Length: 91
Image (cartoon, rainbow, N blue to C red):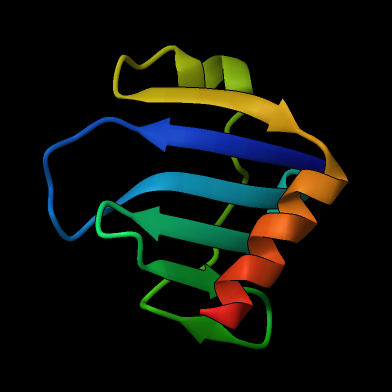
């Protein structure tokens, strides 16, 4: 498993600005999105909230993600992802 935190730099009010992903074999397993307003959405194979859905297909590598000026991604630990995942479920 790998865990990613990606900042999305844009001016779209209805799109998330932070994306947290749990990735297994190149596929998103769980995702949390945080919007500029602080609202959080999440998705896994069985549930979703706030319009968040899992990515289809292979998730790009951090190198590929960071090649775009719009995005700044980095790896995070499993405990950091779990904290964000649990926080999304509490809101």
